[in-house]
Length: 135
Image (cartoon, rainbow, N blue to C red; front, top):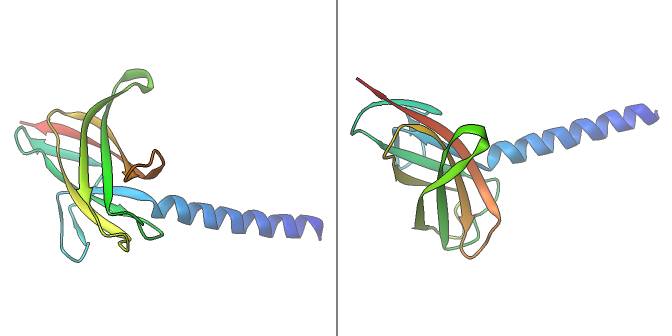
């Protein structure tokens, strides 16, 4: 009985945690329709040099609760190093659960995006992607 309750509690905890992690993410695509449908969604992109505009889509399990978010876009380097590539601030509505944003990538590589609410240092969503130039 003791192990049965523990197993149930562990399974419920896992399900809640995995739903939370999945729901608090930034996804990437070549385009996002007004309905929120992503076109060409991936975490790895191959573009001819010069075609470097991606769409980000933030999906939350709760309302964003602020009127502004900040995206910090980091270029990832060797040995877990990261370099701030750009910061984007965007107006949102507090009742939104999801919202898109454009990101202009200047060089190929791996990237990490962290999203913050206005005036907060708490990350509300994250995502990673990579970009390689094609010939």
